[in-house]
Image (cartoon, rainbow, N blue to C red; front, side):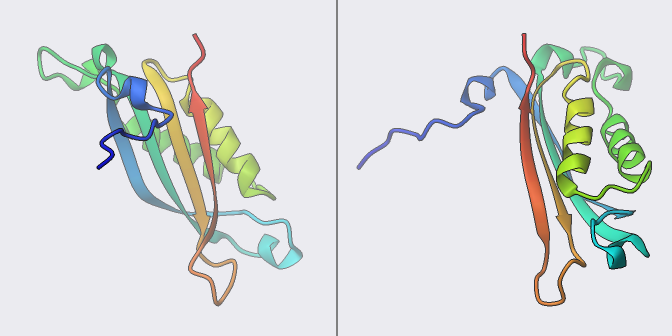
Length: 135
């Protein structure tokens, strides 16, 4: 039996970070390159995972001001997604990812978007990106 774990892009962060996640943030976004997509907003689901260093995600006094508040992630994702019409999910996801990776303490980020109304016979179509903080 092989007990060797497959290396993951975040293995070195497993024990030095805490993972914070937002699952299925649902927003009605103006998104799409086709003319019919520009007539009304479409539902988009976002999943976001950030790995934040333990020193930046631990509070010795159990105080919210000592850690990254989930509100910051949700609010920034929402603000960017609703700010304008995006033709491409790629542009929207890159814009959000580039903003979030620069928040204090975040070392790694994974962000997905899923358009749930793009096709009648498809549950969702989407994009996934990863970002790593550069030292």
